[in-house]
Length: 152
Image 1 (tube, rainbow, N blue to C red):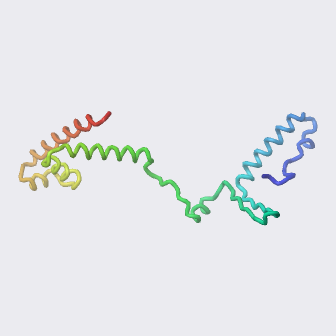
Image 2 (image 1 turned 180 degrees about the vertical axis):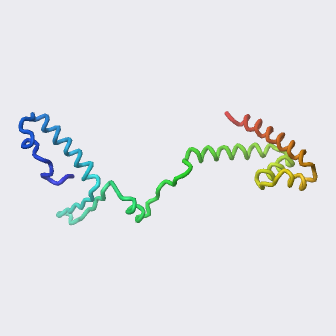
């Protein structure tokens, strides 16, 4: 609450104004004080009868004080919706990969998860580079078709 007597005497300031106008000026000034003072100011209320002191912090706070009190802030980064969508996509991809044969899954794992080149995979599997490339294209198309079936 604002301190008593903080409202200006609008009757003195505007003697020709009607009572309705004066009342609107008082309400407006009180709202301004509430926004500028009451929300920002800390208050201490002393209850003589109960012999208690209550502290009401301001509702507007500084960044430094919040950091000092170890208040958690939302991290700058991916929002919750994007995280959920990404997780759902990973789950769908995992399901699709489980539909592949053991050999197809091994090829995809080597190329995309272990980041081997097509030539390295060809040497490892003992086949030609072109064969690895054609298998990769065929498997990726198969995964696309499987993923299409998963979508609602």
